[in-house]
Length: 243
Image (tube, rainbow, N blue to C red; front, side, top):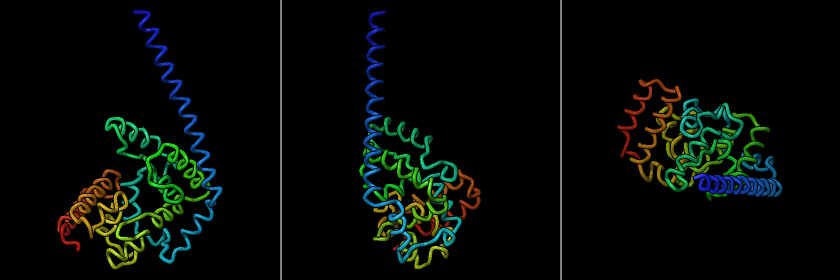
């Protein structure tokens, strides 16, 4: 039994050593990828290119309900973290292990902005580490409002709309500040999977996603049960009617 325990302990120490060494290797490669990316195009230039869009929408022009809906469904600790959310990462790792594949990313709004600015959509650990370094730089140099503003001006909403103003005009024929609670919560759910949740493509799936947004808003305290139910009734009435 003692011999078996020694072998088991040695094996575990070996596994842990390999794990730690691999972690340092991935971290090093991720940092190199980050330095290469910002070396080719600085963060300031990337930010400037987003702000130069004709359809750029400033934070003050966004309805509060829209801002709250996005944070509720994408990053509920956005106002408190420094670019990375350890709780969300641990939850994502657990769910990925249980599923045996990548099913949840755990990325914050800041990380998603970093990804959209510099990196592709591949779920690669080196890229994820590089994304973290960019996110930390964003949090250091820009306010939360600026980061959120850049995020909604750089994400894809389906149907060829690559920012919140284009999506609002395209789907509703309105400027972002004119969106209703119904429209805000619908739009907030689309970027998670634009090809699936675009209301012109899959109105029923878009409605189900919107109900999830409402559920998250209630949990986060942005909506009371009554307020969430009121919008949910509109969702039910509109489901299947979006052309």
